[in-house]
Length: 282
Ligand code: SF4
Ligand code: SF4
Image 1 (cartoon, rainbow, N blue to C red):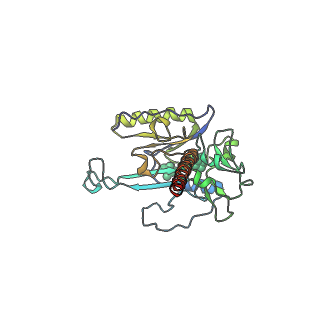
Image 2: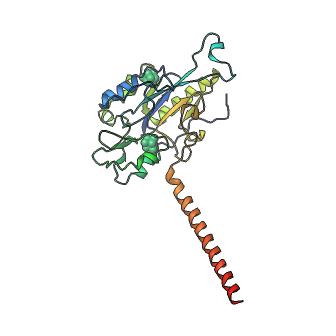
Image 3: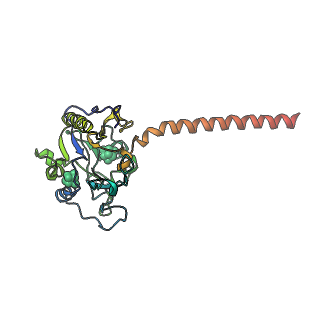
């Protein structure tokens, strides 16, 4: 257990609403996936056996805004395989993944039409009547969340049930979750709850951490997530980036590097011409 990992800091705005997804409570029932599809009228996916896991949804996508990942671990921290543990331990990790409704949202910065907005709840929503399907938001998201739909060619992702929030209702996934693994509320209150839960788990010897807590390093240069997670393994185990970065933050360094390289090449060319000139005249 790491005791050096700080928990419980976020840069969310006062009044921001979000999700706390506690993976230690998830039983993998997928009620959240179904409730999301039902409320948002999303078509079914092309279900099939992926051959990778019992997770037949595979990933977040244009028609899957909640995705319950099933991660089967081969051994525990001591290297013991599930079949050698007594009593038998299935050793599954389950994570109901979703858009993180980032404090600095790469998708929103990249959108050229202003289709992606920050709402009064501090959530990030794509306005379907303005999206032109250019797809700039897709590579700009460090978590691979938005996707272009094969049905209408536009970008889609979780809206944090904006229509339900406007009517004072909690999002459909949080409402449907039978174990309260998905909790909805003001981000600061959820973070306090997450901090208390992590302390409780650590007291039981569980290696718990908050993903989305900027102090953990789990948000890189993004500065906080309004949808954050309690994990019991490093983020990479759940296919989450350990230190996500906004791709657009690399544009200025890349431009400066290219400009310096061009300058150095120009100077070298000038010197070589001068040298050839001297040789021809001397
Ligand atoms: S997770 Fe991706 S899609 Fe969601 S707000 Fe952040 S950058 Fe945008
Ligand atoms: S509804 Fe709750 S318990 Fe069921 S898969 Fe989703 S997060 Fe897990």
